[in-house]
Length: 189
Length: 328
Image (cartoon, rainbow over all chains, first blue to last red; front, side, top):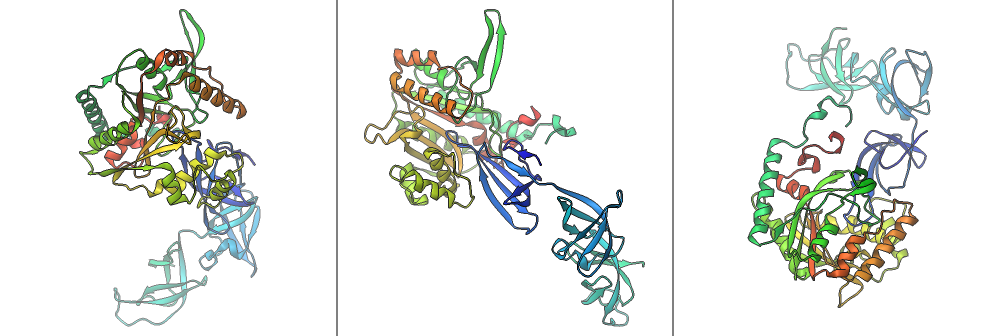
C-alpha cells in the first residue's frame, strides 16, 4: 500500500495505525510563525470505533490501509458467520459478529448492504438505511385506536424489537430506519 | 477541494471583502495619526530568510541584464525594511503580501497579508504596548477586549506545563511532550521544537479569548532576529501577541550587531544543510545595511488576515481571503 506524507493526509483517508485500519476524520496544520510545523490528526479506528488523536512532524509518513467500501448482497448466515456476495464478481466473503455490530437484527436474505473490506475481509457491515420487515410478535392493540397516543414493542422477523404505534398488528409489515431503530410507517407487504 | 465546478467563486463573502477594505483604511489612519511612514519594498528579491522553519518560494527571473537569477518571494518584508531603516527612513510600516511554502491549514495559506512595522528609538516593551493598542483599536468595532495581559514566556511554561524552559533537560522536555494529550514520535525534535510543542499544547489553549495576551522574553535559542536581553542573556527581546489561542504578531527589539547577525545566519544555514533543505544565499545587502548601522529600533509583523478573521468571528483564513491557494 502507498504511504502518505503530511501534504497528502486528508479527511477520509484510510491509514494503518498500530497495525489497525483507521479513517482520518480531521487534520489540523499547526505552525507557529517561528517554529516547527506539526499536523494534528484525528482518526477513528475502524475495528473498535474509537477516536484517537496523534501529532505528526513534516517528515512523518502514514501507511495507507487497503480499505474499500462496497455494496454486497446478503446471502445467509450459518449461526456463526454471515455471508455476502459481490453482485458483479459473485465473490463471497464471510463476516463475523463484530463486523455486523448489530446489523444482523435488521438484514434479510438478498438485502444489499454497505460492506467495508480491509485486505478483502469485511470489518464493517451496514444494513440498508431503510428496510421493510414483517412483525412476528406484538401485543394486540386497542380497537379503534388508529392514531397517536402511545406505542408498544414489536418484534420483527429479523429479530429487532421496534417501538410501534398501538394500532399495528402482528403480521403487518413496517418501514424502519435502521440507523435510529425507529418505526417510520406502515408498509404494504 | 479540487476540480469542483464552484472553484471559480471566492471563499470570502461580500461582508468580509468590505470589512477588509474598512480595516485597511483604519490601519492606515492609525499609523498616519502616529506619523509612521507607509513604505513598499519588493515582494520578489534575490535575498530571503534563512530561518530553518520557513520555506521561501522562488522563481527564476529572466529580464534584460538579469539572466536566470533565482529570486525569492518574501516570507516577510523584514530584510528590505531594515535596509530602509539603515538608510535613515525613520519609523515605517508596510502592509503587503508574504509567501511561505508548505503552510496550509485553518489559519494558514501560503500567500497571506502581513502588516510589519518598525519604531526607531523605541524599546521592545513600548512596541508591545503599541501592538496591543493597534489590535484593540482595529477590533473595537466588533468586540470589546479586556485590557491586554503582558506575561513572561518562562512564567507561562512553569505555570501551565510545569517546565522551567531554561533549566529543564532536553530529556525532561521530551518526556513532557510524549505525555501530552496528542502523542507524537519525538525523535528528531530538538530542544526548541519540544518547547514549541509544549507551548502550543499546554500554554496557548489557556489564553483568554477576550483579550490580547503579549508573551515576552522568549528563550535566546529562539531569538530569531531579536537582540538578547542585557539583564538575562538566556532570553531574547522577542515577543508574540495573541487573541485567545490565535497567534497574531511576532516582534523584536531588533538585533543590530552585524557580527552576531552573520553568526546566526550561518547557524541557520548549517541547520538547513543538516536537514537537507534548500540553501538560499547569505543576504549580503541586508548584512551590508547592518554594517552601515541599523538605528536602535523595535519591529513587529502581524498576520492581517487573522486579525480580520477575529473581527468577523471567522472559523478560518478561507473566510477572509478571496481565493485560497486551491482556487488561486
